[in-house]
Amino acid sequence: MQSLTVRLEMVFDQVRKARNGLRTGRIIDVGSDHGYLAVRCLEEGIVDSAVCTEIHKAPAKRSEDALINAGYGDLSEVYVTDGLTGVPLKSGDIIVMAGIGGLNIIDIIKRAVTDNDSNVLSNVVFVVQPQKSNELVRRYLAESGFSYLEEAVCCDRNIFYNCIRVVYTGACRDLTDLEACYGPLLLERYKAGDKEVKEYFDHLDSIFEIRKRSNPAVRTALEEKRKNECI
Image (cartoon, rainbow, N blue to C red; front, side, top):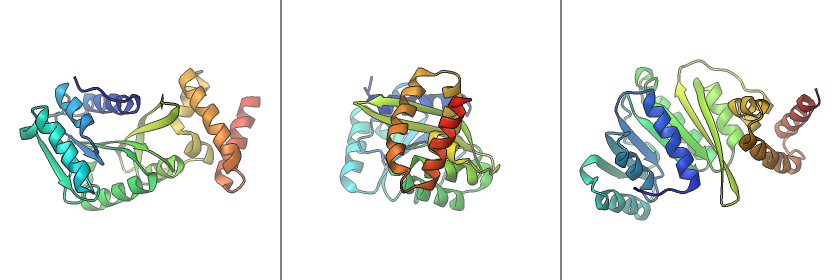
C-alpha cells in the first residue's frame, strides 16, 4: 500500500469521503509532484482512473513513473500543463489541489468554472489544501457559488495544514472575516470543543497577532473570536 505523509493522508481521507457522494469517476491531482496520492486512490479502488497534471516536466515524469511502477499505467494519464488547462472535467471527477499556493488555486478554479458547464461542475468535488492565503481561498469559494462540505486540519512535522472539500451549487454567499480567517466549518467544530481544531486555532491566533498590524480583516477576525470566547 502506498504510504502518504500525514498531510496527504488528510487529503486522501477527503477524497474517500467525496467518492461516497459521487458515482465512480476519476481523481485529477493538480500539481501531483510524485503521484503518490493517485496511486493510493487507485490501490484502494475509490477511483476508476487518475489524471495527474504538473507545470514542469520533471515532477510530471515522477508521477508517471510512480503510476507505471505501481501497475496503473493503463489507468492513468499525466499532463505537463498549467492547472487544468486541456483537461475537460467530467461528472464524477474529484479534483485535488494540494500543496500549492492559495492564489494559484483560485486562478485554476476560476478557469475551470469558465471552461466547464455548470451541470458538470455540480457533479464534481474539489478538495483543496492551500499552502498559504487560506482566507482568500475560503472567501473566493463562498462568493463563487461553492458550498462547503467539510474542513479538516492536521499537524505534519510541526506544520499545520487545512483542507477544504467543496462542491459547486451556484449559491453565492459572503463570509465574515472570522469565517474567512478561521474556516466556517472549523468554527463549528471549535465551538463543539474539538481538540484538534483548538490546537490549529491557537496556532492561527499567534500568527494573526502579528498579521493584524497590517491586515484589517485579520484584526477583525481575531477581535471577534476573542469577543465570542468572553460571552
